[in-house]
Image (cartoon, rainbow, N blue to C red):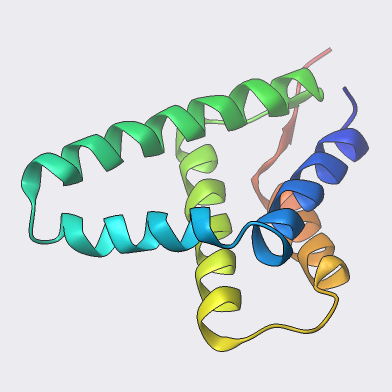
Length: 116
């Protein structure tokens, strides 16, 4: 997988979540809000967040980018912020280009080329 392939995959997933499958991210945000009142749910969501950041690390490394756990967590939280803002404040009719720009900036900011 190349960095361009990773970018394409992230753009495709995020665009689908915003256009075709809004129920899943909206349910996730409802769970996040509920976790402020339910410590065991908070623990479950924290575990899930770490699982997604581990997936980001594996995907970035497969694309030739070395990314730290902290940077993966920042990328995950940034993606959640993009989804939350788009779903709760409205979005353009075709959000793909805005998503692509955000993903490109996030990847460029958080990546460190792997040593050869």
